[in-house]
Length: 462
Image (cartoon, rainbow, N blue to C red; front, side, top):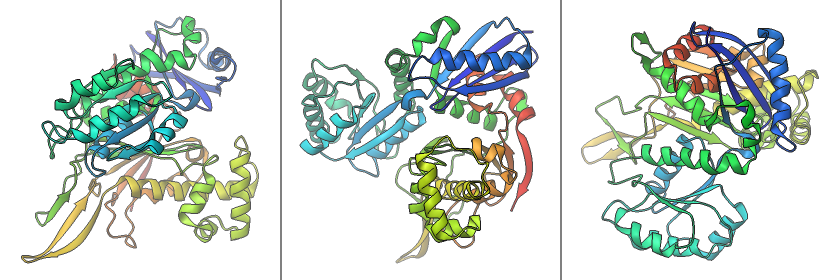
């Protein structure tokens, strides 16, 4: 055996997973509340004790970890045009596993800088302009950031013609230069920036969150948790060597505060009479819906879809829905033992999945030109993505997990949305996705084999 311990320091739970890397076998998993307010080792050691009851005593050859504890990696970004460099900066940040607190476009104002100081991000991503293009805006923004009272690292990933002058404007601050996230109008180049963001996470953020206190129990903290899930999904989609992958897929992670959506597909228009509007989408894409969550953000779901919609999904009166949504947002540790709370949780999960995937997927509209009607696509076409992976406490423990998952799919009542039309549904019942992302760094074949074995297929939908 080659036992490997994989740890996810989550915002609520610390999850531990033991695998045999030699035999590509899942040995067991356990979790305990994350104790970031006191000492993260307490929650970790509690989870390890539970794990040992399942696996017995193991001499781990490696101990690897990811983290989203204490809010994860919080970023603010700025760009020039909202649909172009600002979007590119946001995609780069989300794909690296960050939580994007705010996206600014055009020139920063004093009020913007004051807001940035209040937010005090872990990293600020300064982007704007294609290479050789506009330098005025990004240089202005660099000078404005220099006046900010809060201290944070600044990652420059904009017009290379402005790089040196921006660094001069930011003299005395912690600044890192990276390749432009959008060197040309039709080109995304977010990979180098994502690598630098992860590097900053390892060098600064982990230390700032106090997670190095667990150093005696770990070999390495490798990445933010969403980045680990992204790596797992990309491996599952593409496969490894002789092991076939799933092909185009989407994944939905329903949390207490947010709902994350991942897609692995090029998403290009499929018809000759459809043209793409805006930036080309990255193959591996992540979005985060900060108003879609089962506890902290339950009022956000209520606001987004309305009390009547949740009432129909839950079977509860609209007044009861509003009352319970407020209650669970204040009592975030409540479990679904109460029948009314269980009914509301089902409705919240269905609505969160539907709304989050609709926002993540692209849309198409018919426009009329002198040459006749054409279709304009914005975002990704995911209609042919035929695998759907769903995770998160509510769906994992629900008796209606497959029904919740179906809300991710295409709805004839919303024909413009390019959501999947038919998928096989897989439930991550053992919470292995982040662990497999960690494992894939050194054992990709074994991580893929474990996922294909352990993800619970619920059958095709629609």
